Length: 150
Length: 405
Image (cartoon, rainbow over all chains, first blue to last red; front, top):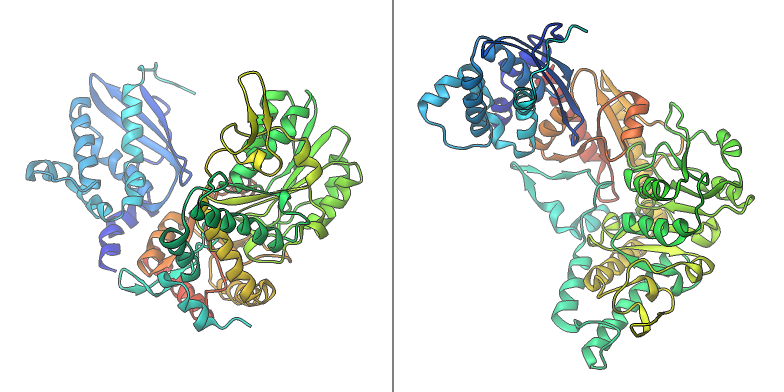
């Protein structure tokens, strides 16, 4: 059971039950859909980036506790961060969930996101934890759309 | 009667532990475990009899050929086909369906023709027909589902017409457990001279199959779902169809004479078995069919129905659990959803309790769409499961609720 407690920590269960920033952003500069065809998890991510800084970020979708809480914690974590920083954190987070060695500075930088370290014991669940992050990179790499108002 | 202790001791893997807990393997609809008899048949082949088949004049090649062709006889008897020539070895159910789509159906399809399948099909009994339809301009028509997981066969008379060139339906749903009234479907289709393919991937391990009595035109199944190896399966087709069908793949063994101008194809069923086949798989599958025959498929069916009834009752008493697929005639598969808990979390937590279940859409996305869900947790039972294991599964589900609740 200890690995399970590692995986399903209170903060993860909390963000699964009450996901933060769970809404569509009417005004956004970046947007992408994420889909894990293996398990049917679906995620839609919205970003409002102003002068290289993530001013606002939100998501909607349905998925397991790991993918929902990961998206929720990611949105909280990235608000106010620069795009350049964000790309670094993507690398750190990816290393964290796939069990790669992280230096202390990187681990500290991830803050609350470190709760996802437990995922590395469950290879089948790595994709759940990283879906929102891959969607994020897709959103950032896609051509900046004009702020949508629909 | 199934002697459960004896049966369990035949399967070495059932004695293993997962995370320190005794393994409870209930992912049998995905693939079944192998008895020692099957494992031994493969060891025996490679230790004592192995060589390539059919073309060798030497001793070992003849022994290997005898075992391989003996396996064809075993399959023929197991599904009560009338002739060994009607049994084609394929890689599995998927290849069997693709073979019929390419070699039987596609050459005769015209734009506007129809292929009738059902809403509960596994993707492997959807995509091959979709590909064929795309290439020919034919249309895919669907027998709809009912809320309890049965097919709405009252729609059948309207769906069947001279435009329909083939009906392809599953005998038993891999995600809902429903056993379809394929006899009725075959009877109604045959009244209009429409041939019928039965996907036997699930039914083969759980009920007696008599292709002559069913009168189906094609029946396909995989060895690994009936306690045999992966990468092997069989296609049964009526001789009259096989004689008129084009080869599926070209290569060695499927020919009588080859020149650069013209090739004369081999007789059925060899015409459809190009290249060196899966010899060990074929022989292992025959050993598995022998094993099942020895236990008796009727005895297996009776025992599994007891397990199904008990599990359905236990699970439905769990608050917040909903069983997806409640047809009156079901095989031993129980799909369920838990209020507010995603199946993937259910699967991971149950796994830590030693219980191997399947979570996801089970390659039946249209079924998930019908119920407006993205996934289920599926418990699929076998004759080697026990009442005690069902209690363990029930406890594991309760644990999921505690942890996620």
